Image (cartoon, rainbow, N blue to C red):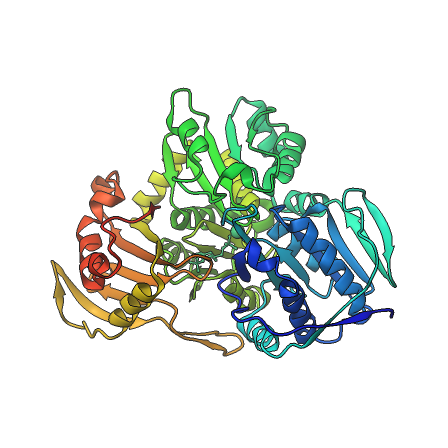
Length: 541
Ligand code: VG1
Ligand code: CO
């Protein structure tokens, strides 16, 4: 293979977080920075000779430049073929789908997900393994270790590839295959869901708004919702991927998806609303004037899964991240199937999905998915909801209220304190780790136990520690604290608050009201105001 070796020296801090390496674009633009990380991936995953790699991203600023760099490096490292999404576009779940379908030697996804895009904003990169999922910690640690030693990388001195024309192009000794990023994914969705029933739902006048937030799901949502399912034109809002996401923050929550929230809570609201994040792996679900928490969404989908052809045989198990509410546990118990509790981050679901132990997985952070791929999948969740709505012919709010009446309500909220001082955040976590509260009373609540969540993977035995401080009370209520592993500025403290409410007469209460005592206890015990200077969170979901 014709390749050129370029001398380089290590950069500090190339440690992947919850979901890959995320830094400011300007950090990635330093000569050698991206190259070092990519070479560290190639050096850590085994012999790349003759293999195929999948490649694409969420379309943010620097996506195209990064793809050209990675293509030349893939050629220099002996890959035979790279499958790259047309225009450099490939949603995270579609990447997982393609890696699995074509059995590639994994893939590289360029995304900083919900983080803003643009010259002064964020960029990100992660490697997904041949099973289709995010690299497990052993792999990301090997990549990080390699970045600290690296002294050269391999590339090929050839021109750029036209990413916009479908087809196969030679690049050195390698073939670049520019493919339709939507087709394989759309085909998979049609295997899982009753498209005829959903088409009939739309034909009957059902109205929906899908907010792609100017990010990667636009082309997917248009092709599937407005195309295959014949939803009216205009169902998809903000459907063209932009490099800066229209100056927005492509985070599908009540704060950032404000256009959608206004539409669903305004006059003449449609029946159903949904939004997806930058790279298409997360989702927010809204009914007319009604917000479905991600934890409830997982539970409702699990309880109704057999209405969908792909899940008609039932579920093997459910998995949720530790901070996600236990609403799914109640459904699992009723179904007589196991419910697994993992650390935050989709990479922890991979072994459970591969082993057939879990069918549905979810995180409180608007992530829902199943064993159809090895990533969370925003549009998949939206289609599953549509399938359930088409079969049940009831409004979203009614379905969720009936669910609470049957299983009880796990009242839930997450409070984020963004961009706080890192030292203060670390000090706060250290303070919490040092507490021994067992048996003590905090307000009207008695502490059953407090700990820092540690996880032993039931399939491969790998151990992950320090995954979030929990304070669990006698009645099962709990508050959880962790620091975000996806941000690029300062630290973000996440506080998760949950209380089980069996009484339907209380189910209508605003969670901020219902949880007020627990929220105050959490703020006091963690000394949030004293340590961070913040009296209120930045984002409440
Ligand atoms: C956040 C969420 C986590 C999610 C991760 C990646 O991580 O809390 O549940 O898996 O983002 O999602 P953190 O470490 O900031 O809490 V995505 O859509 O950014 O790939
Ligand atoms: Co994402």
